[in-house]
Amino acid sequence: MSWSVVGDTVRDMSVSIRAASEVDDAVVAAFARLIPQLSSSSPAPTAADLLAIVDNPNSVLFLAEVDGALVGSLTLVFYRIPTGLKAWIEDVVVDASARGHGVGEALNLAAIAEARARGAKNVSLTSRSSREAANRLYQRLGFTPYETNLYRYSLDD
Image (cartoon, rainbow, N blue to C red; front, side, top):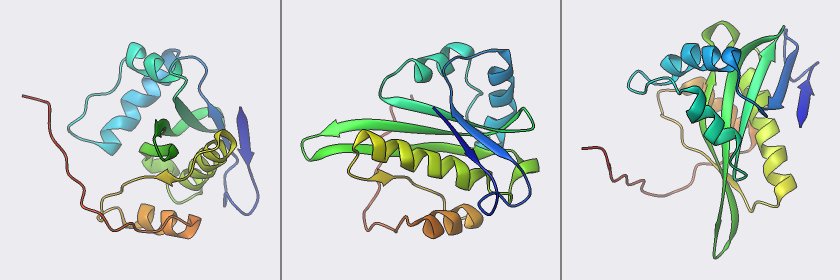
């Protein structure tokens, strides 16, 4: 699958969004550059880590390219529960050099389209309150805050 977003949606760049179908050295190098911009505590994924996402039928690794350079990514995960199929967006990251130009918007629109095509009931995500631009984007796209308590049980010792 491939989505191209141009014109009003992407302000001054031509962004191409695609679902990764393979993992090569360029993809691994891009994640080595992107992941530290997302999380200072997480190591960059290996080729095997990325391939596990790409090969999983319940996940889609979206890649954003500008002029042939990988400048962003988003992981969309599907899971089935008794009340239906749900989708979850994780690890949205756009290179600092490409922020503010519609790359994150294009990635999210591609993920929403894929979730809709697969019949998901909804698409959820979380975002730190300190990521003000990202939170404005999500609300502009139609995501609404959901009243809940998020709990996490760490399995790391």
